[in-house]
Image 1 (cartoon, rainbow, N blue to C red):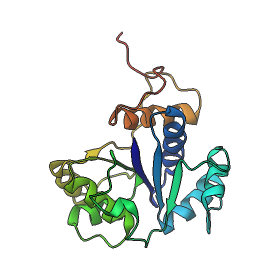
Image 2: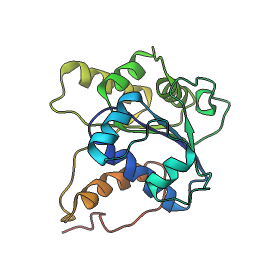
Image 3: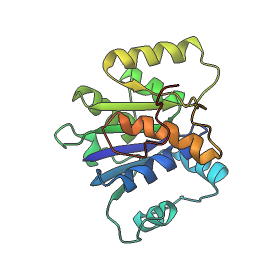
Length: 200
């Protein structure tokens, strides 16, 4: 399976980080096309303490704890509209944007994108592939909600970064991973079952 993962400039960079780690560990994903927005680089530095400016594949692998020579993750420049995810003829299962800023969500909803994240999401929708958006904002205003409704009607899946607590998380990582597992479920990707609801 091949997927595109984008991290944008909303707070919650840990959701993108943990999604990448879980995808890499799943054994079901052969290639991840990674796109980072400019603001995401700032948020990653502030929230996770990682400086990914001018990062290359080895630096991304180091950040994620992967072997330095791993080819699993292919990093694409935000302005590279000739990258594989920008074309519908390039086969892949879909795309995840985690976290998804409201600016990114609005650009996708309008169909007036200006960068590779917007274009890849538009291609995902037009090809009928799975597009998962993870907004992290509070409160939502009417524009946010209207844009989300428009995208759901176009085929996107909205998974807000709303934590669950029935699995009694003891760490932030356990809290985040519960949401990440919900993202993986959208693609049928195997993961730990420990946070699944089993009834009361």
